Length: 638
Image (cartoon, rainbow, N blue to C red; front, side, top):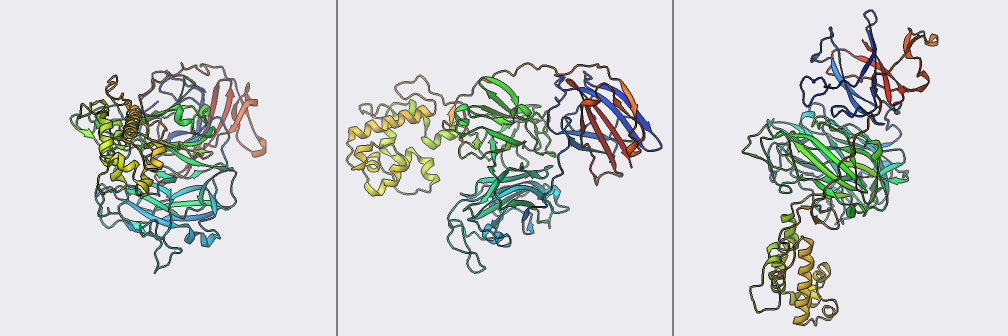
């Protein structure tokens, strides 16, 4: 059975399951059943059984009718191919509580949408480390973290991201009288920013994340995420969602970060695949459609070759908003489509737990291609309207990510950007590449070279504005022959003729040749030929600004290999009644032919759930039957 929403599941057309037995004891309240499942049925409505946890649903009632069962239902996760892991415990580690200081859940003065406050709180490791005997100059390893949601405020929490900050401090210590700052921001321990949709410069290295439905995130025992090591400041960004504009709401939620001063051998990190999150980053998507996608984000082989070595994926996280239905992170290696990094047929905003990658894709290699696509159902808005992309919950976004190791210094943040918008970073108007110069008798050959020669700030207008330049215009000659005044600019934008610019003696001919060469490179990086060659006048069609070559045409992905079924039904299973006298248990049924191949208890233990009227417990045993599995579950309603 399957469902694509919070509705009654539909029965699959193909029933790829075989019931072995079912029994019920009205006196003890015990119900037990056993089924056989193929490891991979190749049915599009079925998940294949892999060495990873899967969500499983349960419900019970007074009859055998299939219906909602009100509060007598729930979910759990189980790995059918492995024994249960040891329970998560942070008891042996120190804890830093990084929580909001009872902040009002309202937007700051510069906030965009009153229903979507973005609020940040800053934490000084020199202050927090005193209790534990370390300073911000010491390196510590985060071994895991868990959400600390203030009771009653859960419905207002959209996401949390903990960032590590780079930057130089203005003062040497933090006191109530002397506020230490990051740059000139006036930063101090406990400072709250009431509007921080965009993180400040230097505070853009994410180290921990949480979204609705997620729980604790635990690193493997030999992996830690670095904190400190000269980075003094942490900042927690909280995205609240208050659609009804409830008043008088204050919040002290946050993250409990567990750490050790005994460094682990391997550094972990987070890799984002940002197909569209910020306002203006991605064009709106069409309303009124059951399945519409954002632009696919491609991490090309040239880009992943920046990794110094293969990386191991620890957990994969999908993130969209309410209209998101599915996300795909396709891995292609040596021309073969290896399938999705995480096999998830339906994205659910309320269950954004990270899960292990598919077993055959736990290790990614330099040279792999990664293609990320997000799907949306926009039928909740009119077909003539558009759905904006942006940070707020009532907009949409596509930002899957994964935790991995070892940490890579290059190629760890991938981000789509519209090619036309990106082109403005390197040239104010890309059509100059395909346009003749205004002075027909000149020697520039193209409008591009003519513009660069005449006015450097106007040629790179967006870049100069981004750096806050508000000075006068200057020519290419003034830049290259400008001596000490323009030295920093020449180093940042190395397009001047090298030899003559060092002595500030470049001739007009040398400068014209240099602007032609610069335009050839600039236009070529955008996919454009340079006038008078008009063989290509359209920009490359996609972009990933995290790659050495940001703009390129989308590749054609290889088709996935045809599914090969693993396990076939029906299968013959002979059951024998046995008894374990040592525990004085009642007789139970086991597979007589395959009892030596059992994989042990699956750990299918239903946790207490405050929404249920009564508690229950379940014990599962899995027997290997070649390419099929027999799952035996015993459930007791208490």
